[in-house]
Length: 109
Image 1 (tube, rainbow, N blue to C red):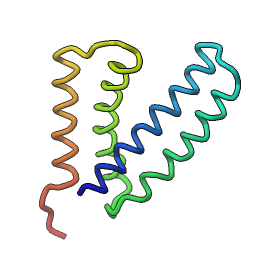
Image 2: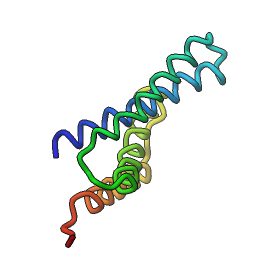
Image 3: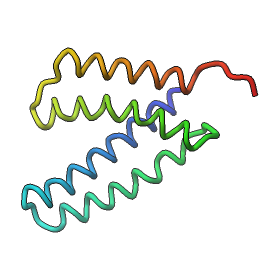
């Protein structure tokens, strides 16, 4: 379980970080190399989830979506300096509960 969580966190940081570099390049007029770095990080993001041990691609990506939401809220708070409100945290908690249910609920076959 620990490795799965670490991989979700690394994938989330790669997706948000790569997208942020592309955002800076296109929206904030940063140099082209920002976009290139962002693209390389986004390629890494596409590879990282394949290291998960879960057998279902769809389930991994659906669960990852919940982790991504939490990381995006934290990114906005720490990097963009936009403090999340109660509803941001509530929504993130609901997503985290959904991730836990999707990945760790007992299943038959």
